Amino acid sequence: MKKVYLLGVMAFVLMLFAGCGQEEDETLKVCINDTNRWYMDTLVEGWQEIEGGSEVEIVEIPTDGESAELKLSELRTEIMAGEGPDIFVLLCTPTRAVVSHSDLFSDLEKAMKADMFLPLDEYISNAKYIDTSGWNQTVLEAGKTEEGQVVLPLYYDLPAYVFNSSDMPEQEIPDTWEEFITTENPVLENAMKGKTFIYFTYSFSKLADYQTAELTFSEEDLKNYLEEYLLFEDKINSQNEEGLSEPIASGWVNGEFFPNTMGASEEEQTCVSIPSREGGVTAMVSTFAAVNKNTQKAEEAFSFLDFMLSDEVTSKRGFTKGEKLYATVVDLNMNMGGITVNQKVFEERYCRNDKVSAAFETLNDRIDSVRFYSELDRDLYDLHTQYRMSSEPDIDQLVKTTYETMKMRLAE
Image (cartoon, rainbow, N blue to C red):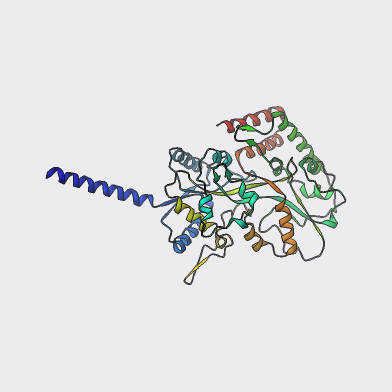
């Protein structure tokens, strides 16, 4: 009898522990950059009210470099141990941004190949809200591996110019990087003056082959690329031509890129993208979402993403329950701008007339390659910066050091 009693007590205790563990497991962990905390709080509230979502723990990556590195180390240890947050909604930091720490996934494509994320194809096909038919398919494709759609690109960067065609001289618009950096078009040169250092990485449609862990160019190639780029930069920055026409729009395409006056006249307009060496245009993903391959809450995790990426949330229309609106201010790319991959929503919100729509489609349709910002891009950016900041730069040594650093990153 005593033995039966003890067994009963042990069973009861085990049930208590099991119950505690189950309750803890019901909390969905969402990893974000702390700049998105307020937006994420409103999103969580909306998901819980509209979809009956579970409790959510926000795992923040701090902005401060030292605190960030400690948090990143902790998260990487958890992930390698088969744990970690259920969902990642994170930035791929653009090279132009000043940062004091690396991203959680310093090379997202490498993480994709390492099978770190859950394939989402089946969930997407049964989604309540997500309809990827209105998304930019070229950009969406960048989140796929042989396992399927493992990453959802959310926002991407595309630098461009729009001119009145009558302001442009007779020279043809450059279709390749080589044509771009040897242009004799004074209006285009004038528009690029002082801004070209951010364009160098866009000349690469692909930096690495992740199957072989090799760079797509040699050390000698990199030196040649840098030298030709520096000549181009010196040329346009030394010119002092006055009276040249300015572009109607320039910079990164986003909600503020196209001015309200665009479309007011009947004049034809010319769109210029930054071309790659192969002759296409490269877009760079700056924000993404993914589900941890280790998650035990895949259905709940996708429910959250499904709500977050709905047209209602992306467009900021939100959802109504009773007399209250939910999730009307979510902007997961607030600090970076860029274009939402939901092309249908972008056009509905920002393409105010036929001329703007035509310009946006022209620029967007030229995209033929997509990359995620990574530390490899940062290395190229730093190579240029170090050369310009040195009083007596040794280009051979700088290129050699950069190339070796990039190769080491791929080998890690």
